[in-house]
Image 1 (cartoon, rainbow, N blue to C red):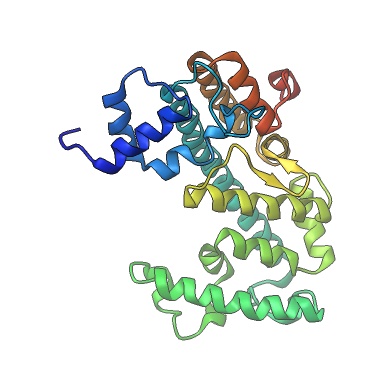
Image 2: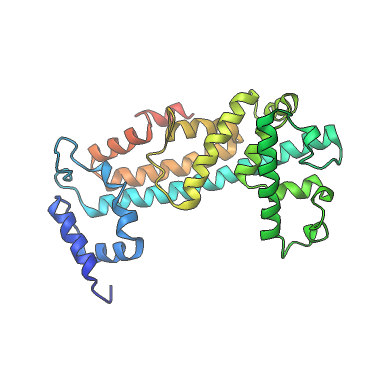
Length: 283
């Protein structure tokens, strides 16, 4: 670090006062400068805090480098899961649009007569149509496929229009499809419409966390945790895709296990909801 920052020095001293140690203090300052103290410390320190003490001090012999290992693990976890949720987004869009075309031909994808007719669904449809139109206007400048349809959304072929549905948009669309049409889509995921809808609602929350750089390892959604997300991804992804993703997560867990003490590693697994035999459960 070429310059000394008074606020970083104060932050280092504050961490020391709580019992945190440093293997390389100068390198730690550079990490804080690069990553932002708030993003690095808040949320990740819970793995190492001594919960028996009211002062929120760190467990004995806890090092900054261990905390940074958890931070790095969470960052890679977000990148990985984001990529594989994007695969599922493409799958869901494709299943929906082909089932829709099979039944309704080239009708406008957001045609209300082809969707659930309940009052709540109609409200969601109105909001969805506005959002999709905004997505088109914001992202269509360099898309020749959509330029010629800008003045008439209803003329946009379904296979093109679905491209402009964000993850939350396509999840909402699935929710407002007719029951029999939802069932056809759910068959591709080998589950019921109710369960598929629930899965994608949760994955939408996870995706937003990943996209916005929030903390993921302590994810909770109702009674679900990060291990619940793993079971959902295992259910929805192709076998090879899931195995590839989970093998890479295991590599990072091995890295963390080597970097932190045993108690902190088990705290991490517990916060994520991972059982000790998580690798056997996922086989």
